[in-house]
Length: 168
Image (cartoon, rainbow, N blue to C red; front, side, top):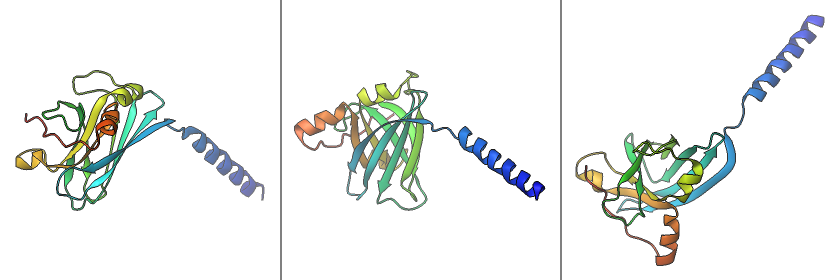
């Protein structure tokens, strides 16, 4: 009986230690933006930016209307969504078309400028999901939306058109 009690106590202590090591990576600060259809495809969703304890961001995109096994390119662009030829500020992890989900820990922009959560939600930017990385399907925007201060521009002038991205 003492052996069983000892094993139970050790097990409880082990579980308690495991739970205390599982520290939450997030501060609780987060912002969610809507993503609207960008073409004839009926795809929409949200992008949620969550502040990590180290000040960086987790960018979580969740789409509805996707299917198949493709990986859909996802970019953070400077400027609002209607800006034609907007520079790519960061390449985010592609969206899994089967689940409609992408998660990226974003620490810096493409030009290697460090980027905190506070910086990201103050950036005039947009998120665009492309049909493909290359070829004519690259210019098809499945969904997109403004983030940061660009959201205020959309509210002031109504829904904005989707600008074609810069060809590289």
